[in-house]
Image 1 (cartoon, rainbow, N blue to C red):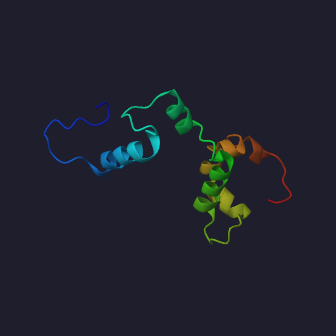
Image 2 (image 1 turned 180 degrees about the vertical axis):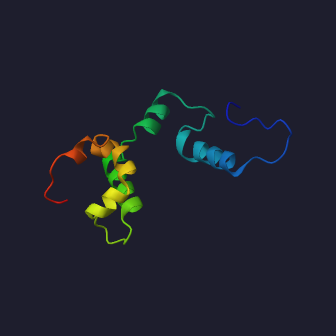
Amino acid sequence: ADMFANEEGGPEPDWVITEREQFSDFRDLNKDGKMDKDEIQHWILPQDYDHALAEARHLVYESDVDKDQKLTKQEVLDNWNMFVGSQATNYGEDLTRNHDEL
């Protein structure tokens, strides 16, 4: 209700339907209609999810213009704001060091 209150009784937006499905299919593991401490922990810190790998894939996917799975110096520079805002680059600090691969 904090994000969407269906006051008019009309149809729910697609994002609300998707969130309900995510909750019932993936978040509410014991199907009791609410999230307990273990379910919240699994949601926030899933054991089978590699955050660093996901962030690296995201950076390459968004920046690799020619889709060769390699980033050129120009591709990184063209998307500098994404790299500076990424935890994978220590919020841009790692980009200031000399790297042979760049």
